[in-house]
Length: 405
Image (cartoon, rainbow, N blue to C red; front, side, top):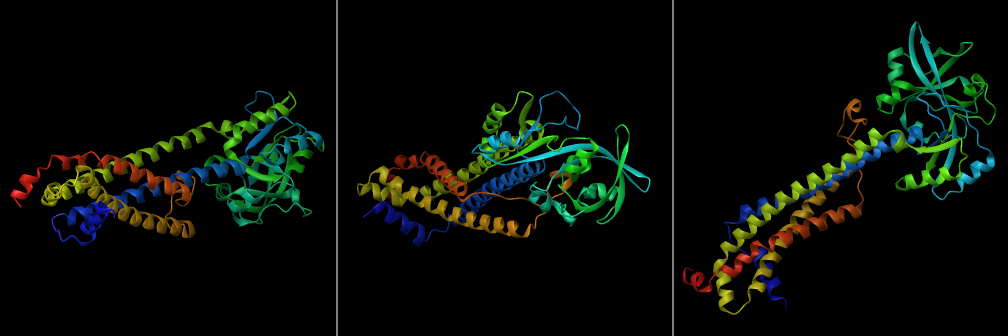
């Protein structure tokens, strides 16, 4: 029989002490709030990073293949890959698909109002799944329709500025020699909640850009590459560069937008700070509860010592008691955190200002494995820290405690 465990259970579940009840409740409450705050912080920061990353990946692709030249222009120099070259790239184990695209600057003219935009052209094979998720009104481009070249997706920001709605038509001018103009119809209105994207881009047909720029059937502005494992993005980019002709190069979305991804990486520091602060709060409360529990039961400790029980076993009794409090607090904290997590995932009840945070709601994402590791880390740190104050037991004299009982 494990006597220290038996005695700890009797003290914890059947003890009639009242002096330490408030401290025990405060300790359990602090542990509950600590683990809940840690889980929520990790879930929110992970969800936030995933949402922002998915927006950039969805709009620009994971890897972009362009002409190997120095240019600050939004309009890319035409390139072309043969079917054999594309097949070689698609055989890479981390490559999912490769889509051609092209861009062309234009000026929208709506009832005397003008707006400079960048037309991004895509074709019928382009995966419009991300675009469909961003659509607020209307639908994505129907490349099977006869008027596919005149269909356009515009952002809600542009639509509001120019007072456009789905079904409206307007003229867009393309600055070239000679200046060309085309009539477009608003097929859908999207929003990425990123002002940099919504302010500049409109989505149209790749074939129209080919005709405007007198490009060949295979010529494009670049290629978007979608990958399976985003964590292998740098290695995949390097591998594709080795397969490309010397006049082309591959760059990835992280290299194209270093400011955004450096900012996202800095958010990891917030996770660490919150974890440290919450652990400190929980440990201080646990130490207080343990010390009060030891002092309150000094008479019992003296009797056990007089009966020959070693300091180590008496110390184990109080560590078992502390483990019970930790476990109770963690269960409450995890249950509350999981309830809030699934509530927010399904209802998106807690909102954000998309103009500031790039998302319209508080995103959350966390794995069960992460939750388990967070709990184990908090338990381990708390028990290791509590071992030092439990050394007070060795300083309690059985003669004095029994004498003043």
